[in-house]
Amino acid sequence: MTNSKSGNKTSVIRVEHFNAAHRLENPNWDDQKNREVFGKCNNPNYHGHNYDLEVKVTGFVDPQTGFVMDIKELSDIINSQVLDRFDHRNLNLDVVEFEHLNPTAENIAYVIYCLLRERISEAVELKIKLYETPRNFVEYPA
Ligand code: NI
Image (cartoon, rainbow, N blue to C red; front, side):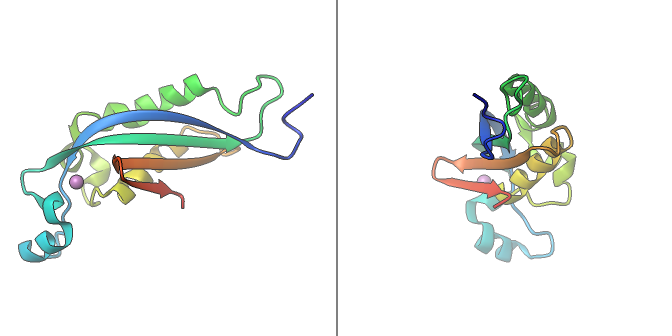
């Protein structure tokens, strides 16, 4: 019996967590417009979120290992590429990718995708789900 030639792909999902501060701002707008659009997330002195991250890798099961991807390896890649850079950091000030990119959940998910894609085989699909609060989350790619 094999799971690799059936034509159905399998997803493996690793859940991680990080805390980070951010401030949402469009530097092309004045203070009033920034406050109107971003509300509390425009607070000049930053504010924190407890982010929950789900990384989904989808592909065919390797008949040799029985894995789509070694989930320990996936965890190590998320740690080195994302958590070591983002956890307990100020995203605006400490993470170079957000120097000129507003650190919205949408943009954070995109940056995470790009950082992980560098290290994960093109043979598998990658999807990022990022929770900024328990009720607000984004997915990339959609
Ligand atoms: Ni916020």
